[in-house]
Image (cartoon, rainbow, N blue to C red; front, side, top):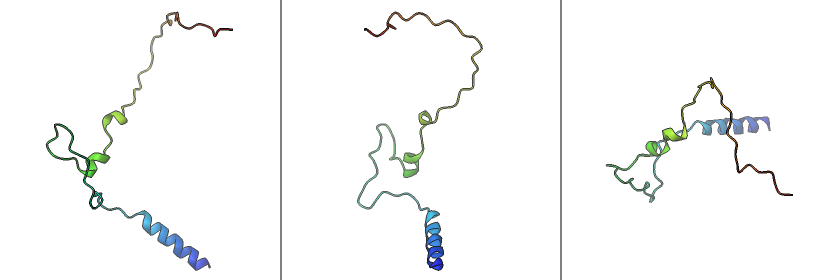
Length: 79
């Protein structure tokens, strides 16, 4: 019984590291070429995250603060 457990674990781990080139499924084209692009994007281009999804972190310290102006619409709830 222990052998089967070890064999199952080995097979599961062997399948985890498999990496292949990304391709469109057979019979399925890639998305249409964006307007203005000269050639259709590759699978790697489609998986690359644009810069807007990973913005740079701002570590600027707030060196001075100011009083908030009053908000005329910040009213208490009606009773």
